[in-house]
Length: 290
Image 1 (cartoon, rainbow, N blue to C red):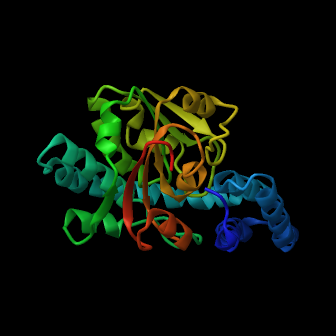
Image 2: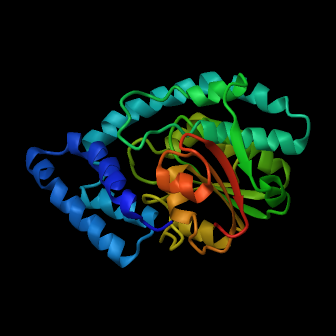
């Protein structure tokens, strides 16, 4: 996804609010200039929003140790809440009347768990949209035939987003494994705010579901990664991309792989691209990443 005029302000806000409170005074004072320079040069050089976000985060000093400490406690609370709700979500999924309906319900639940705001989160996630889905008050939009993509998949790259919600990804992972595809699960290598890492995988025992768990430095983008996530991207034939960051990385990217996007729409540019209202829970199947 290319950066539009509205994206600059949003990206600035996303990075600034997650990094500024944890910087020393001198670093915080220079942060606006560093962010402006990184975002402006990145837009001119490559434009891909996922890559641009990575550039901005590390120009800001990265998710430093103080931020990592704050978010680690935050993530543990989100994981506990997701674990509490997971049996309710599973029962809702299992009430689907066919394998396709159960798979689509799993995808909707995973997308409904995508609650992290564009600004810095102020409290651990509580997943009200997911509860609304299980109670019939909230509905997701299934666009395209995601189930058909899964039926023909050989190797799926599943790009996770945040801690907590990764617990609901287990429902989708179990469903795709039943169809016989191999699955590479992607999490962040280093602390990256509220994003899921290996500890969150272990919390939900997802290492026992996926064929492998690989890591990326920041958002995985179509240009790949020098590490294991880049290798998994190269060999997969289907991508399941979770959250806003992965949508921005792989939407309209020319990656040439069938892609299923799972997210809650949180901004006008993505709403326009998908033809939905902001706040919509979306499962979007794409034959070519767009």
